[in-house]
Length: 430
Image 1 (cartoon, helix red, strand yellow):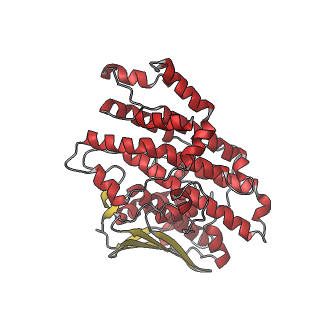
Image 2 (image 1 turned 120 degrees about the horizontal axis):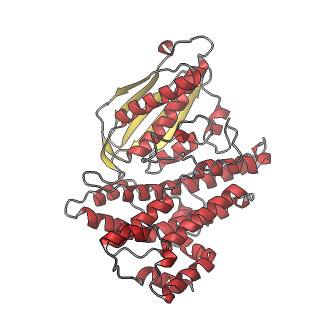
């Protein structure tokens, strides 16, 4: 049965006979009503019946990685039309998305200590399974109309409003309370590693989707050749300052210095997410540290951002005087178990990861606490070969160092258990 499905995924070509006027109307009709033959309907019914077997089979295939520069050059190729570039990317994703999503499902099912059986995780697994089914039902894009239909399916199924990081963080904290006690460090490290591997790969999946859906003239999808970290730091600083001022009544200013004109090829939303998370923490910590002695935000010590353009990296240093932390607190800050936030019983609507379309308008990105900002920012920085390090002086403040690959030549930082499916090897990244 699996061989038959795989053959059909590669060879199935259904001629598109619908006019452009009827195309949009046809898209919103359930696909089961659009099958032209009983054989096609039976093929999909067979997938639905054996979805677990299909997922297991696809999860064993190898993900095809792309470098940042490869993605940008493909999207901005001068010798090819925008339609042909979108078609190329659609064909790549038609194969790649089901494989990557099935690998994420397999990883969730294999989470240790019964985490994969918790309600939040099961909900994510079922959601991913439905996405895979819809992708497998979609025709291989051979022309512009089929590419548009595929883009609609991708956008409607994958550009959802579900906060997978929030749900998984809530699952590991509320579902394994005994492991959060002292003496279980090895267990916590094992779970943190599994979570880091999952989200490292999920960042790649979301980047590919956003890159494909955002292809347009003059811009290489979600990747800009003129990403300006100083400008992004300034905008993120204003946003963080306004948020902290609303919450605490005062806030330090954010000062950006250094190479203000530096540009490099990078996804701006990834850089923006990292900097906003760090600046939210820095401004909030400073406001809280001086809350009893200073009332006016104009007198609070500023948060400083220094931008440096090196030969290999764009580096940023974010410094605050928010009181710092102990070495134990530093280890906890990058753990998915650490949070001062009490998760509500049901909360599945906020997105808390790099998202261009909803970044500035989504209040979920602006809330403090939750405990997922630092670990998610860390793996976001590492995705294309960068890094995020925190150095604190207890009683004074914190210096955060962010290094982002300047040339964009680093291949996707996929863990070995994703590159060489099924997930049977330990990652060398964490």
